[in-house]
Image 1 (cartoon, rainbow, N blue to C red):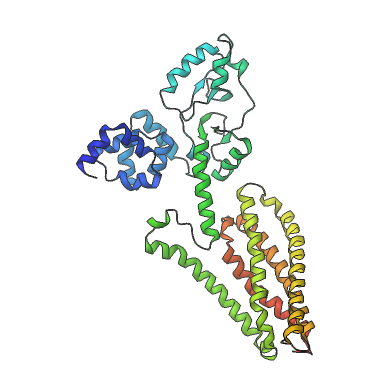
Image 2: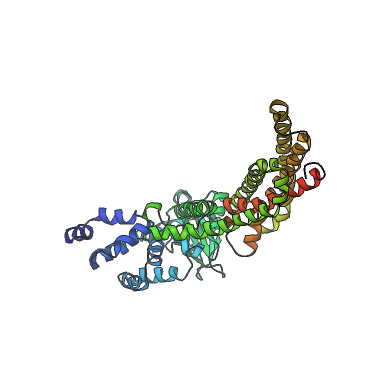
Length: 417
């Protein structure tokens, strides 16, 4: 950053606002090149929660330097936020909010609120009612406060039935609570019921976007990039994607091993090999569908760990139904092609029956596997999104071959085999 740019940043409110609107990653990339005065201005235009997000993305040396540039009260607020993990309500909240006492009259409360608005609270839509121990007693909207009679006490008009967040609430659950209650801000409480801050809807928008991006990348068969695609360095791209590709490649080697195990059957009835792609792709597609639906339902809070059996039962019925449909189509295809082109020989009906039964088994197995695997990963403490589409497809490929050739051995033994 040039001296002229530093000077412009230091003396321009517009530049300060522009820095505030940058993403955390862009702020982190730029602030290290600012002069000390520009760094001080940059830090002071940020709300405490945004400043904490920025500092958490920097190395410890620069973090300490920038933290020292804040005034005492702001430094205390940011330091308190840094004690929380980034992905919990405490790490998302803004400690600045408008508060009043329950015994204040509406007129007294309005005068008190005016003094607080200048401190840049997270939201001016809600006024939170706290007692002398900082415990949350109720809430009143700014509109309601301005419309009530001036002599009425706050405790008479406040709403005491509240939606709140524990400070340790995971960010995906925070997003679900916002979606369920359609609020623009929710207070965060500690274990004693004391209010620590406010999480606003704009904070949740960033969380949802980040979570969705990470899940999509994992479900595509790679580690989350945690950065924009075009800014990721080549070694990082290779490392993030290479690990998963190697694992999937090893999994596909098991498919080759399964084919080798049934080489005698294939040698006796080469016609069976024609249907291998059809069988394993159908099972992989069914498994990928099931895992995608379950992972998304988990992310939205629609299903919990305790629901695994209900989900499995649904997928048993769904997988069996889909398998029967595909199996019927496969049987019709084999019989019809034999009638038109005479390519499957005198045992075409048995071949069609083999394909049909195999499709039922493989699609059923893929659906159940794809639905249960996310629950298993969650139970083991892993991200369910790791049950990605390629991973499920690879797993079902191997087992699909075993099912197919086992059915072929049973149906065609003494005929083609």
